[in-house]
Length: 140
Image 1 (cartoon, rainbow, N blue to C red):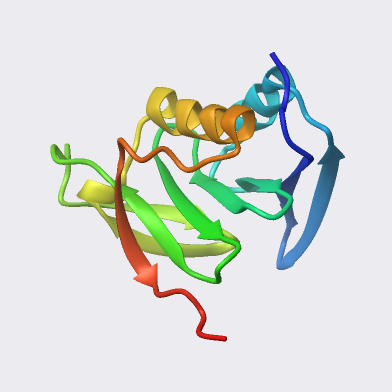
Image 2: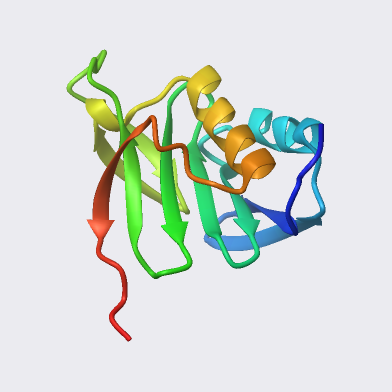
């Protein structure tokens, strides 16, 4: 099963305070899975799925706890929340910065990875999930 829309991945690799983004064009689900499995919350802490004219989805953290954030083409952003947090908060490194994320934002690898796979294959953010807006759409 591969991407149905023009897409690419960006993987954030950290060496000290410097980041190097690896770009993968026309990724398959298998390639996405491989890069998601490399998330260690330290050297590799975010995988971005970018789909032309739709937007991006970021899976950050690792190796056991993740956050998923959408960045639609309209300039807005939202994160996924669950209704059954296992902990009050979790410290994660995402995008090179360590922060304490509320337990409702913490996803296990199975859920986080399946959200990214569905986005890659369908080109849409899963409406069945609870998306909490972080930033409203940009006004033209």
